[in-house]
Length: 334
Image (cartoon, rainbow, N blue to C red; front, side, top):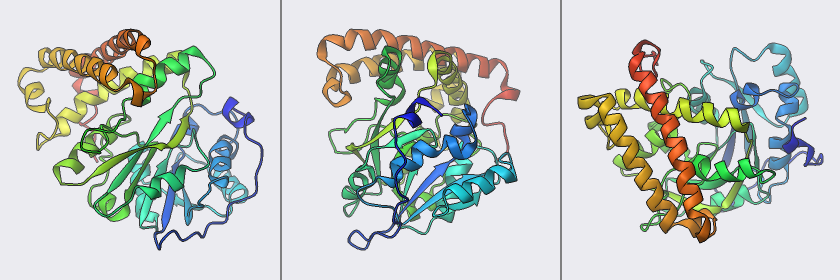
């Protein structure tokens, strides 16, 4: 049992039929995150997530668990037994973004909320997401943080999850796929690119949606606590982010992302410049939006230093991807 799981007591199963002004909502839970750092059976590792869903002030109309061929039949049977109210669906690939797509395709709700299998939502998470779906809103990004049990977790909550803020026009700056909801028809028209191996798919999708005229807003009250991967996991995460980022530039055939043309022309040199620009933008965000991020003004220099470290790790990952293109994201088949 994880530390997150041990803080939650068993609660009754949710009633999965709530109508909020006629809007129906499906929650999609992938299983890849839980399987990456198992602490017990897959059903046990999903307990904290499902306990959080069971305590919602507005219950979802359905919960979908996405499995793939790496989940053995015994584990799938235990999931059906432990969470009989959930609908199991299968992803054709063991890929994080393919799992999200499969969940959206299997959903029957007009709104599809995405929650990772190592996350615990606040009791009013669904209520807060639904409250922002006014006419013209195509998606709502929530606020995610690591648990506050250690300085390391509090520190990396900011560069890993905390740069989602509300821009001047009311839209979300970025989004985390562990805490976001979309109108289902929008997501089906613009699925996540499953050629991306692990990181950056949400960033890429957000820019694709913006280019298509979609409006994604930010709701800070829609809170989720994300499982903390530990110090080594943080380094690995940012290295893979940088590695996958190179692949995304190679997949961005319509040059939706700002750095794509520069990268394709100058390669590794461009990547250094892009990293420098990102560091400056991080500093500006921390300086201007520290209240939204939830950090005190006097601590901004501390997080500015942290973001330099994480961006440099990403740069190393990107340079490795350039040096070994045969192993890079974006060369894989869809």
